[in-house]
Amino acid sequence: MPAKRTAMRKIRDILRLRLSAGLSIRAINASTKVSVGAIQKLLAQAKALELDWPLPAELDDSQLARLFYPEADTRVSSRYQVPDWASLHQELKRKGMTKQLLWEEYTRQYPNRCYSYSQFCDRYTHWRGLQKRSMRQSHRAGEKCFVDYCGQTVPIICADTGEFRSAQVFVAVLGASNYTYAEATWSQALPDWLGSHVRAFEYFGGTPAMVVPDNLKSGVSRACRYDPDLNPSYQQLAAHYQLAVVPARPYKPKDKAKAEVGVQVVERWILARLRHHSFFSLAELNQCIRTLLDELNLKPFKQLPGNRREAFAQLDQPALRPLPCHPYHYVAIKPVKVNIDYHVQYEQHHYSVPHQYVGETLELHASDTLIRLYFRGQQVAAHPRKHRPGTTTEAAHMPQRHRKHQQWTPGRLKNWAQDIGPEVLRWVDAQLQSRDHPEQAYRVCLGLLSLSRDYPTQRLDAACRIANRAGLVRLKQVSSILRSNRDRLPEQLSLVAELPQDHENIRGPKNFH
Image (tube, rainbow, N blue to C red; front, side, top):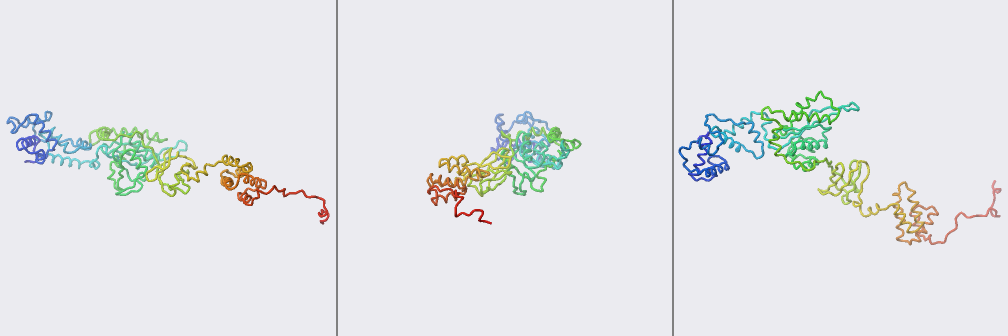
């Protein structure tokens, strides 16, 4: 059988092998190299047309073609119809598209002037090899988004001081359509990096299956050819949008050729045109970038039909996944170790966790309004975020003895002391007032009040009366009075007694010279 057999010859062979030889569809597929689906459709159509073998003698190739393909060009020509390779190349980017299917559509359109499948593939491969390097990459629609920063920055003038500050330019390019997004941020730090991703997805109106970044420190904690470590916040963004992050291999620019070319295009067609402009705010710069970005996406391709906007509408846009209901909000993630006081520190503020986690390393998630703490993937604590130094403690996180101590207040201590006796209240009140902070007297007051467990309240009140009169402020002094039973002795006279001033045994000043 000749290599350049026409589609009409194959139709006759398929009908002969089925109607005359009785071969199965799989056997016909192996013999003619026509897909199983195409054979099934052709045989079903032959059955509907009530064709039998041998075919009528007056049924030539043109008439046979009209029976099966009424709209096909059945004119016989010695010249082959060259396919539109650029359009076919764009079609191959669609999800599920194959060269076999495109060749079958091509043969149905030009049944007498078409290449065989092997010629079709060979000529397409040859055409693709003559194109630019970026065209040789195969990118499925909606599959990859390449992201990077431009090497060139844009100066922004501070209106108050006249100082210059450089703005970074973020670029995102969809693989199949080359649809491009760009914006300026103050830095390449993690909040700006992730925020640029969120705004790029909103500009595209959906999310791709994969994001291919460079090994930027904000996105990749540890670069590696085989197993790079992603930043936890970057992983959280990927989980929020249900996509995969596949960093390019270190020192392999071909892995992100789309981003390299996209950066080059943005620098040439946007930043170069803004080189003589002066900007006084980031918003002003981004407004100009957005205007020129729309022009860039409408600029016609040089070697492909259409432009980036049209290619996006045909290829990537239908294949992108829908955006979630709420955009991702940046959350800082860092490991923290629980101190012995069952608190962790974040930006000079301390937050409590259950005391059982003392000494463990937790994962802290800090949003604009909330602090969450996780242990092995389970949330163990949550606090409103504080933006000033201090301490936030939840009573449920404290040990029981600390919790009881935390519940004491000056008012509660005075009420307990008053229930015992007025002298006890006087002694406790003096302790609270003698300290710069009442909390410093809690322990000594609790120690005094706890003596009521071992001694009757009357004895404790009497001991405090003796201590108040003598100015005894130490707890051990009150305890000594009780242990020595001094509180049970009769009232003693004042140590300062009235002594007579005129007595024969008393010498006066005249006796001292």
